[in-house]
Length: 448
Ligand code: AVJ
Ligand code: FE
Image (tube, rainbow, N blue to C red; front, side, top):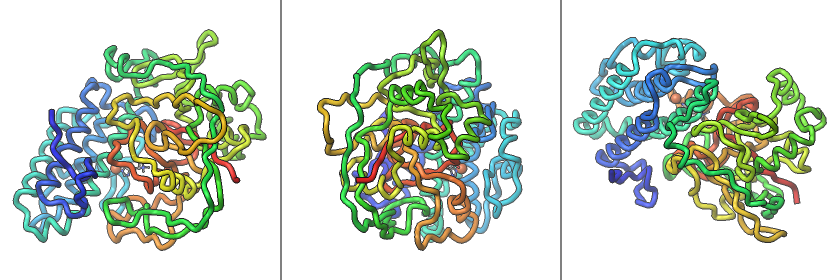
């Protein structure tokens, strides 16, 4: 089916997303909501309900929470107050907004056998009806008042599309039957393990300077991407591609997981406490390494970017390799100066798995880094802290990003589970350093 035009999804349209009219908002809304449901369409009812760990939410919860977000931040104040579709749902589907009210504990979301999956879909469609009615009938000043929250709601739902993919993967991986998300048909879509015999990564050098960092606010960006400000970035080099499974296996086989000299203290403790002997989803059987993918258990692709590693493993690998992780300012500088376009292996490609790195043709230096966008999120060494001058918005939506600016690490570039239109060079993702269930990988950097 032909997708409706949407300024958020098709940035080439040249319409500033803040200037979207009713028709534009409606097109974006329909497209975002449809994409979420399409991601869930291969699931069986039982798949929607389980919570395989506290960090992962049931698919059913994601479907409801994203609807609750539009109800709470767009519809609730319409014409002086629209009652929610079900007044009990706020307690179940509020994620973390203290200003909005109490909620069930995050690690109890998997206990919600009710509302049923069918009821959650009816809830979604009731919210859809109300949002469309709001777009048809609201006064201009009412639409203007919630336009920013509406666009935030679209981007919020895109974040949950990625979380649906990663949380479904984690849930399926917990099952000894190692089911495929798409059934047998999915085998075709996933990349076959390749053997490109890629050589060592080449280094792409960037000059030092005082660099503008962050989003200028011209189009939509999350609040944590601004304000744009200057940072001193000394000269550095970035690897021309992500670290591959083949390379990470060399670290593992060199005893990387058993040699504390490569690890941060917190990382060594996490590795010991969790019993890590390799990336999440890796297993070894009769000498052969396999990894769990959304198409089931597959032989490890040697030239695919290593994936599902924590910050601690990324950092230990970099030290073993005689390099380091990039700072987020270096990463952004490299993306901007190399003119990398936001294109690649994203959610839209429906592979749900990182693609192999390109074969190295000649030794020496390379002009531009490849796979900066898509495939795997790249751990930086930067803590998730506010940019100079950052102020969270007043009210509940101020809780969206700002209150998490402690004890988390920045990741850049998006993954094979991120919608392409969701990612920008300034995009700041963040997770605690131990997290491994997102599509997280490694790109090396060094001083020059
Ligand atoms: C930016 C991915 C860490 O998972 O909580 C979803 C995204 N924010 N709903 C998260 C998010 C609000 C966020 N991450
Ligand atoms: Fe959310």
